[in-house]
Structure formats: structure tokens, C-alpha cells
Image (cartoon, rainbow, N blue to C red; front, side):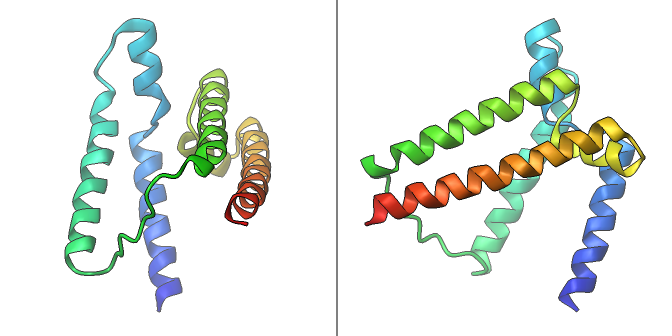
Length: 140
């Protein structure tokens, strides 16, 4: 049953992403280049919805908040995460859209978007392996 619900949710979110042309990079890019605030509605609605859903899930007991406090040993992981985020943002601006937009474009047949996603997921694998190695070194 969970697999069917996940598939249906994926179709629904994909449909909404395709119809709304949702992108998280466009608000930042447009504000920096043209001082245009118009496309911030989608980003702010995403943040508001996420906050609301996490609050409800936490209230219902579906989430646990066992997050350890920051320790100086985690600094390399945070630097790696920040660097990866900046790199993803830069590449996303250069190709003209965020990963959500690239998924939609690839599903519509864009080869450029498909190549972007191949590099994106290769980067995810490299980042995950580096993070796991760093955490193993830190926790020993």
C-alpha cells in the first residue's frame, strides 16, 4: 500500500511541478539580476507548506527530534555541505533551472536536462561517499 501511495504522490507532485513551472533557483537569480520579487511566491509557499507539515507531523508524534548539538568535529561536513550547495546553485543558474525544473524537462524529452541529471546524481553519490567517510573519521 505504501508503494502505491508513494507512486500516486509522485505523479501528483510531478504534475504540479510541470504545470506550475516551479523552480527554487529563479527567485534568487531574478532578484539578484533584476530585483524582481514576483517569483518568490512559489518559494515562500514551499517554505510555508514545509513548516506547516513538519509542525503537524511533530505534533502527531511522527517525527523525532533527536538531533545532536553542533560539535567542532562536524565542521568539515558542514563545509562540504555548503560547498556542494554553492556548486549546485552555480551550475543550476548556468543551465537555467533548478533540479526540479530539470526533472520535468527530462521527463518531457530534453536531452540537456537528462545530462544535467546524470551529473547531478553522480555528484550526489560522490557527496554521500565523502560525507560518510568524513563522519566515520570524526566519530572514531
